[in-house]
Image (cartoon, rainbow, N blue to C red):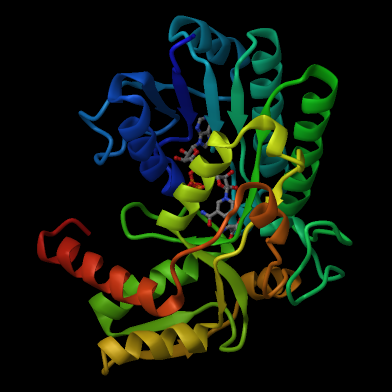
Length: 321
Ligand code: NAD
Ligand code: AKB
């Protein structure tokens, strides 16, 4: 049996740092190669191999895959929804070309498994708002959403045409305290905790009643690993699985934070990100993921709030923020 050797591309981002650390626990530190354009994230330093890599450079990527004897690739590099609207051409180019580079190399080198995340951003204003199903009308209005939807069909194509075992999840907005979010519309749900602890107040770029599907990072990491460990014959969706965690509005998360920090106040100055958020569903039906590989989230808003505040307080005390 070939030993698993994993390449994580975009390992210094919000998901990459935590996913790399978790994969290292499972597969062994030396067998998980972290890579990114950026300098190595301080949380990864000393925990395993790191290579500087631009996923857009297909030759360089190919060389690393061969040199490191890679058997699985996790592709996390992307430009997210809010940043994508500032430079749509760049977002389209990175988000689609990176995936094509990885899928072609996976096909040519018989890579055993590929992971690539999609997003709830594939959905648009014509998709159902409540409990948005796995299969429905999908008409995204952001370049990010368009690139993710196109990517889902490239995954499906490479699976059916070339038997590349590529798997994917449509993550909701992710909340974490270890690494910073990277330019999404859902970033408010992380910023609010930082500002609550540092300033006692937060100015939100959405409206008080803008509901978005969200998930705590430990649930997202667990979902990713559970999907990747599922037997291939159980996976019925080769585009990307809906997964759901929780759903709340800025007003609700502010009220939850106020239970722990009574002085906290929130005010609202909506900007261009409001239209993006309002184009997405408010909640997601993940019954197909539950049926195929028994997906179930663990964290709700009240548990997330307690955990975020406790961990950010520790980081602040130790001057890690
Ligand atoms: P992020 O922006 O925090 O991290 C992306 C990483 O990719 C960064 O470290 C960046 O330096 C790196 N990168 C960018 N261009 C690169 C290139 N050319 N070569 C190599 N590395 C490059 O993003 P994230 O939040 O960690 O998201 C990871 C993936 O998950 C993305 O595909 C994103 O669309 C998806 N996703 C994230 C969320 C979320 O809430 N964070 C939700 C849904 C989907
Ligand atoms: C974003 O807001 O762009 C991301 C996402 C939901 O894909 N967090």
